[in-house]
Length: 136
Image (cartoon, rainbow, N blue to C red; front, side, top):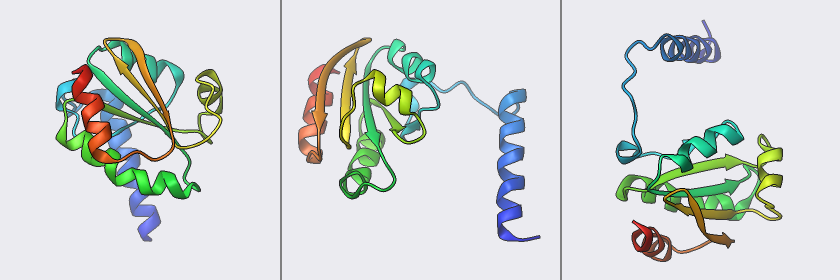
């Protein structure tokens, strides 16, 4: 069996377990230490509706500045109580249009279900952490 087939089999098994509820604990916003990859507009809305602080990173795989921002976003997810949501603008074009994303990276910060900040371009970690803490 090739490595690709093994990965496919593993992913299929994980999806089957997730759908059947086996071995899946209810994940809350406070125990997310990795970014959440947004799958739809409803998914993002659910994350925002949970309350708390949600940093949403609209990115593209081909975007150099997005790649520079990725480790910073990952650290924020691991080091703060904020939920970090990642939206691939190529896969979620309608969602990007809904939020009027014209360039990547674009980040939105939500606090208690409301949009409070919008940033375009790369930001330093300390600036993002400060913003998250301001609304926490």
